[in-house]
Image (tube, rainbow, N blue to C red; front, side):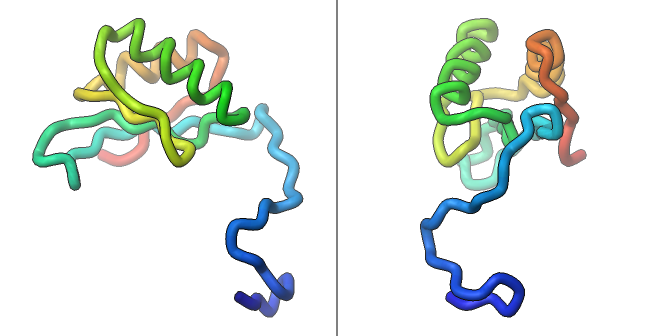
Length: 101
């Protein structure tokens, strides 16, 4: 792939942009699309690497007593728990906003 702005871009290559955790805002939204009508709470934009994402996902699932998964940089929690997750993330010191309606 070629971009006129930055030249040749290889698929799967990592960018050289530094991630500043102070600038990252976690977005929490409720989804039903593609899940057979069942609700899920999706958290995206969590700062940190894969290990931090998995540990945060595990802590959220343990606090709520529900199932979920961590994949593709998203934390997916079963059920509609947007407000509880927002409160939990803010208690952990992360910036979190509700996304969507």
